[in-house]
Every structure is written in structure tokens, then in C-alpha cells.
Length: 618
Ligand code: ADP
Image (tube, rainbow, N blue to C red; front, side, top):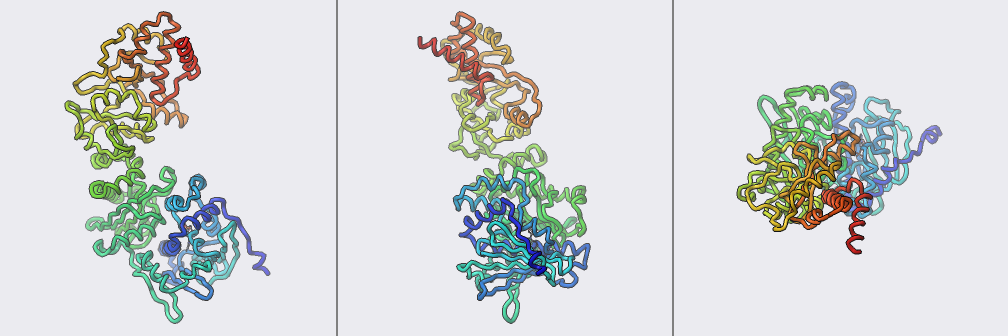
């Protein structure tokens, strides 16, 4: 009776409900991964127990033989996974198996389309996990007791994976967790020994703890139970590296590359770092966990040890196992240790050289990497000046010579294609590729066959500020003052040109909006363009700061006009001032539009343009 009343029904957080539904549908064709996920969780729980037992040996003393045990019951159609790890308290069960704590989850789930194939990929970005059980089970029971709590503090969680779960107190002799999957009728294969054994061999062989299969008479260990990174590189197959990655990250996609190294000498450590194939959904969330999993002599110490890599390599996943850190090392200690700093700089070089190797040997993989993580890697230009040369080589751009829209040109390639007499790398920043390609600033470059880098990523203007030169060549923003072109023909070869006098008149008329008006040598087709002062803030940065609610210093661009353009010549002949001003403001408005902006006063612009059109037709 008492137990009946103690059983509660609790609704899942909305995100969990959504994730469950999507997962069941979209991951069905990879359904066997549930086992890898559950064994991974069990192994993490064992790691955590071993870690806590360093400070409180009593936690593990009664049952020191750590492992995972699988038990099958064909008649009942169940699969049971038991670990004697850290277990969960009632509160932990509620937050771990009833909610998703990662911020941005709701937003992320909102992006899912309902198309199973696409969603499976997205869910890969999210990381599957415990909830994958519901792909094959129509009911899941979790009995768990937190290490250190009494037998009667254990709880049973149970759910059919729909809207809610039940929770009730139980008695449990042993610490740790038992998960029972009540398999769906047509998933009975997962209650069969040979099927489970082969799955464990395939996905979980490298788990550092024994995974055992309980038989009628005896229990046998079915994995090799050695931590993968402790083995020598020559002995580990590619597939094993990939499986280990999936265990580590819960990522659905295989990694693009990895690097496994043992360092001996003054500082001994083993690192295994991976380059994922896909960005996690919270790559841009500053609070998202990042970093490596830290072990000290094979004892797990902490997840997300972020001190081993710089922020701009936050996409790297992996483990580091240090021989000579104390077992009680804390995050604070990691932060202020010269030994860790030395490891970070070695690991950083290692990652950059892994990327360089990928770029040279597997260009398609590298292209994929760049499209997922290029924007993050670029932060390194500002963050990491010691590795500037290595980073510069890894950059990829779209340029005016690019065939498609992809960022695939290197700076070295650009330099090779420079025209005679060119000693500057030209670039243009814009809101989008379409805006960049249509920019009037490119006209003279097109005419003369000079390539220009087109920078359209959010942080490009900021990033490029740190890239002052490459291979001895300075970089120059083509939208700024002081543009220097190699000797050669000029942009405007019109025979019939407006007289310089029009510039002064324009300058007076548009005084409120521009810093000055001058003849341009960068325009071929367009009548006018706006030029940013050499030291003024660029448009992208301005927009970003404004969006963040910050004050932006006042600065006016200059207006450059194409004296050969008929519209400019028409200005010359505008007799009365009102007509002149209409034409001048339309000219300015067009220059603003060509940059992808709105005219400063759109209604005024439309009014003037219409007046001119009406005049024209009457
Ligand atoms: P993830 O493992 O990616 O955090 P899961 O949904 O698989 O996500 O699990 C959620 C949490 O539940 C885990 O982070 C862990 O704290 C807890 N958990 C899952 N399985 C176990 C287990 N066997 N023992 C103890 N805790 C577990």
C-alpha cells in the first residue's frame, strides 16, 4: 500500500517528448546504436565512481570489481544492462532522465523537419544517449542507487517513452544502475546472445571496463576491456578509432580525422584528439561544454577539461591521459599550471598539423571540415599569433575567381594567380555573397582580371584585421580609401567625361551625408560608390556592434563618382538646384543600395526618384 501511494507520475519536459518522438522515427535504421549509448553511459558511471572513490574509498569498497553486465531473457523479451557505477539519486534521475539541460535545445529541435533522413543527421549533431532505448523498447525500467546512499534510497524510473514516466522508491542492495529494456515484439533479436555479443564487439570493445554477458551457467567477458588510447597506434584499427569517438561524443557521424600520440620524457601523457565531421548545434553557445576528457593514469578525472586547447579549437573532441598530474587535480589547478600550458601548446600544434595533413591529403574532407568549422578556426587569427603561419595556410576563401560559392581557395593559390605588378591581396567584405559579387567596388578588378577575396562570414571583417600580410603581401580592403592598384589601364576610359566642377557642386549638396565627393578610378559600369575612410569602422563591424546595442563612432563615407557615366553627365546639365538635388540624392541612394543597405531616408529617395521618372515620361 505504502509503495503504491509513493509512486508518482511525472511529465517529461516538452523537449524530451519531442526528442523521443524524433529519435524513434529518424534513427530506426540505425537502431542497434542504443546498445552503444547505454554501455557508454554505464562506462561513464563507472569512471565517475572510480573518481569519487579516490577521495572516499568506502564508496567502492564493498564491490570493487567494476564492470557492466548484460542479461538476456528471450522468453520475456528483455535485455538488461547493469553497472556498479555511481548510480543516481532521486533528484538526479529526475533531471537526467526527465529533462534536457543543454541550453538552446528547444530552438534546435524546432529546426527538425519531420524528414527522417535529414533529422537523423541533425540528431547526430545533438548526440543521442539514453533515450535511444526507446527505438527498440516499448517500456524501459531504470533501477538505480547512488553510491553512498542507503539501500532504501534507491528509485525505479519507468516509462513507455510517450508523455511521462513514473518514479517510485525501491530497495536495492547494490549501488549502481540496472536498465531493463522491454523490447518491442519485433526487436527480439536484441534478446539473443550472439547478436548482443557481436554488437558489443563492434561498438564497445574499447570500453575500459569489462562488459560481461550473463549466461545460464557462467558469465563471460565479451570485450577486450582495455582503454583504447593505452594501446599502441599500430594495433588500433580505423574502425576502432571511429567507434571510440562515437562512445566519447555520442555523435552519430564518424570523425573526419584523429591523432593519437604518446609523449614521453619530462612530461608523460597520451592524447587522442578527433576532428568531428559535423558541428554540434551549440557551437556558438559560449556556455556549451568543450574540451577533452581528462584521465590521470587511466583514472577518469573530468569531462570537458577546456584548458588543454584554445577556444578557437573548441570543436576538437578527445581524451588526454596524463601520467604525472595528481589524482585530485582540480579545474583551478589546471588553469594556472605551466605544465598544462606546455601541453596545450603541443596539442594545438598537433591539431593544426592534423588539419594541414587533411587539407593536403583529403581535400574533400577538408572542405567539409571548413564548411562546418572554418568560421571558428578563423578566430585563431586573433587568438593565437604564435601559430599564425600554420593558420594562414588553413584558411579558405571564396574569391571572384571561384567557380561555385564554396570557400575553397587558399591564400597561396591567390598569390600564385596575382597579375603582373600586383603586390597586394585585395578583399571585399559584404553581408552575403550575392551582395559581394554585385558590389560596384569590384568593377575595376573585373575589368583588369585581378582576383578579390569575398568575405561574407559574420566575423570576417574583424578576423581579417589580424591578417595584415601573407607571404610578404599586404592585404587591402577594396572598399576603403587609399586603394592602390598595380600600374595599368584605368577603370574609366570614357571619352566623354563630366567636368570636375560637378564634384564640388555634389559635395556641397550632399554635405550632410558624405565626407567628400571625388572622381573614381574604380568604377566602370556604376555611376557612384561609397568609400570608407582608411581608419573608419567597416560596415559589418558597425552592424554587429549596433545589433549588440553598443555606441558606434560617427563616420561618413566618401562618395566616388564615375565621371564617364551618363547619369553624372546629366547632373552637369541640371540647371535648377531642385533638379540637381533630386539627381544627387538618387545617385547617393543607389550607392547605398549597391552596398546592400537601404538609403538613409528611403521615403525621400523614392519621392525624388519618382519625380524624375514622371518628368522623364512627360
Ligand atoms: P549524456 O550521456 O549525453 O549526458 P544521456 O541522455 O545518455 O545523455 O544521459 C543523461 C544523464 O543520465 C547522463 O549524463 C548521466 O548523468 C545519467 N546516466 C545515464 N545512464 C546512467 C548510468 N548507467 N548510471 C548513472 N548515471 C547515468
